[in-house]
Image (cartoon, rainbow, N blue to C red; front, side, top):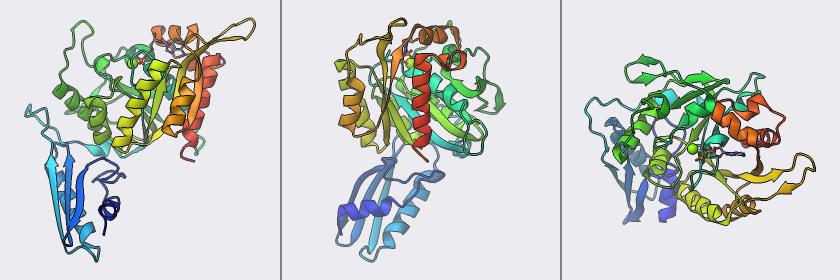
Length: 352
Ligand SMILES: Nc1ncnc2c1ncn2[C@@H]1O[C@H](COP(=O)(O)OP(=O)(O)O)[C@@H](O)[C@H]1O
Ligand SMILES: [Mg+2]
């Protein structure tokens, strides 16, 4: 029996409370068979102390069901939780149970329009009907803790309501339920976030927000490929990630590197969206490719994933951001809005 076969068994073991399995969550550090003993090392970060035991038991049970395995030694290592502030709240994964699809929006580089696209995609999805003929129920989680921009882009200034101890209700605007660190901190106070704080906050966002039923939860990730993204991929049962890039060569390389990180933790790459693709001359319709051409398509090709679309540059996109009035809502006929809606439609079709 090969190590591969052991992995295949673990692929059938679900992470408690989630529909994803241990392998796709990226928990497996080691998996081998020695003299008909399966030796598996799993590593997870959690503050729920019952979780390692229940994962160990279900993994061992699955392994022992194989006729070629006589003994199973499953070691579950718990990565130290960076936060030990005491008043610990267990991850309440039940708050995620009503969510059909969780999609992260990522980019290697900042300033490529990731937040702008997250917000407009969320609004666009909320304007489309789901199977039942009702508008999609959409949530938006701003995980860019250093530079939260969802409140500004969504025109939200009210604080989220605290509905129970450690539990927040998202704030609704344009038919989208949003939560952002920017809604919780004082705008005046400088935020000095340290790694542990970020992890803790993301966990709380993931588990302590009452989303209710959602068709889609979009996650605006911080730029880059660091700890925050990796831990998110572990904490949240992501259905996949959309990679945002610009046409520039430099952005493309970074986007690819970022995407590889998700591949490593087995989060599917749903597609690449190119933003700031060109500027259209209003009179002649001629396209000016300010930042070069073909970056998004070649990234998609390299990552073997769909190319979802090219979003043109348009002043109304920026103005919509500055005023907290997303362009897909205020002017759905704008050329950028139409392209964003097309991307949103492609997203909905990924699971049809
Ligand atoms: N298609 C676009 N047309 C015009 N301006 C855009 C477009 N996309 C983004 N912008 C502007 O670019 C800036 C950076 O966008 P933002 O979404 O904050 O990037 P990121 O989240 O990747 O850092 C913002 O001022 C935004 O309004
Ligand atoms: Mg941003």
